[in-house]
Length: 377
Image (tube, rainbow, N blue to C red):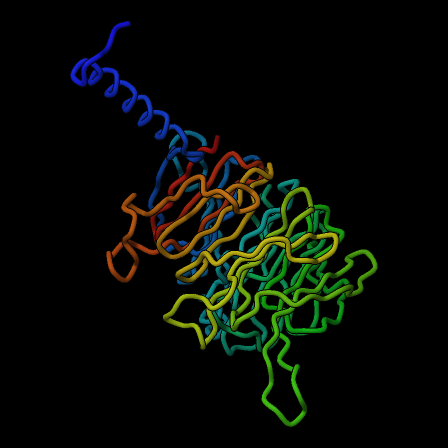
């Protein structure tokens, strides 16, 4: 029998360590492919259905930029909202976060806005992607302001633009901008997500009517299902306990699960969350299947990949790619690849938007005005 000394084993250990390092480097599911600089701080991103186009919007501009990702990134269209008056122009300068949606067939794109105190300004503009000319506008009086997630969806056929407004869920004809129907909701919607087949939707909101008549009101976070074909509200369930504000919702592409996130309520600000801030629900029953306490900052993105393999979460200082049940962290991406730095401590630019492509092959991340595009395994 032959024995190796410690010195004899050193080359073997070095080779094994190098092999482990190479294998570890290969575990990332997203590989950086390209980068470009936009002229504004990007707050909304949407891939076109063929992945060749990427739309970008901003809370500081009334423009939408259309980028070609074939070869080197190239700005190919600038879409202007063209407001009717000065009040409308001011209102449109507050474009809603993540307010861009493409129809599945690529024929239309929605750009949603969050206005201020003006009257009769456009809140949703519907574009033809063949000509990049506006098809119709959805306007309203006294829309509320605020940099919140865009509560808007487009039906699978592309014929309806759907959004909640207060205690109503409203659907608009994308050819005319006129309301097609509405459904009364049991709670005002803070977030809204349409199922992949378009037959159901979930709205999540805060019920502030609970509690004794003469006592303090209790804020209860609710998730309710809406049957889009029957145009009726179904079951409602309590979610995200312990003083959290509902923020984002995402439906898995197979229609089996719904992920929802919250941000800390007044009781929890500046401290760890007292309860779960991400929950995954069974879409058939509405029952919570998994709860997690995972966020430390404002949540800026939540999305399942189109192939159902990944769950994307993003905060101001990091993007994380998880397996679809949020059990295993597969990759963490920071603006400059330096972990541990936050927008407060380290001076990294905040992550303002993150979005998977429809087929799950690409990921776009905006760090203020810088947009990076990754290829996914």
